[in-house]
Length: 102
Image (cartoon, rainbow, N blue to C red; front, side):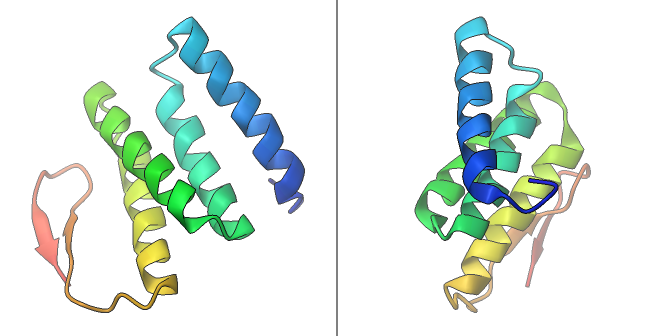
């Protein structure tokens, strides 16, 4: 992903996510899911990106990784923007538990 090869990054990240799931590595899984969401955004697979961002945010909340929750929320907001969804939305404010409206 660092060099922009999203095709290979997607394949490697899929393998890494499968490995985390099979070994029960819940502490690492949220970051992998969120990174995969961003890769899928770049590849134009917004539906899967949304699922990945949602699951990543949920797991990040469960294990207390607030920075990854924020990154997942940003991925979801990016997808909404690309789709032209400009209606007001409610977003969590990272680490505070507060909900903001836009």
